[in-house]
Length: 249
Image 1 (tube, helix red, strand yellow):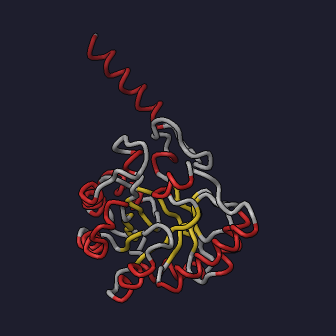
Image 2 (tube, rainbow, N blue to C red):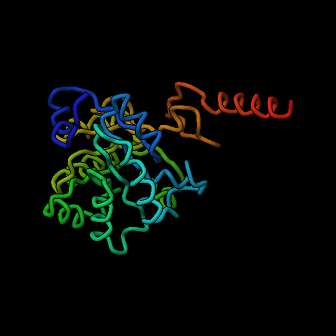
């Protein structure tokens, strides 16, 4: 498989080729996903709850993002590598975006529509930005939890307008999280950039999941939309139990 770049991701929408995107937080997983042919690997701030045991993504620091990003970068050769911009990064936003790029990210994902000026500044500086609308985890307190978005026609209209605003600001792709299928369908038709569904139905140009959800490694609750293809947790427990038993013999 040849190296994928931002332009190939943009072109995928026109070619009607679906985009496969998964998260990675360390070198071994990065190698596995890259070798398996994933188009986009995301170092998500989901590392907060998935890897570090936080309640949500809000406590994740720039230092933690940079630490995990550097590890993943060492394992990625072909996929486009995207880093989430953590909530803690906004104090010195543009400087911190550049830090993520310097640490190896091909692009940075920024949540919501409240940072259009930052996105435009990044575009001017040649830094690719991925947008993110619908349910935005960094606003979990405002939403009162992981709530489905786009249930009412007025909400769908608002989401479509937000998508257009982000496209105009310069994002090259757009994650749509936890919206109704109708909302994601209308958004995907309204913009020329690729849309990637995260629990938003099958109408988008691609799909993204947390790899730990996909592989059955998530500890505790996981999103209802998260597809699980194997249960590595059970396999690992069986292996460790056998090891303990063998040692004690």
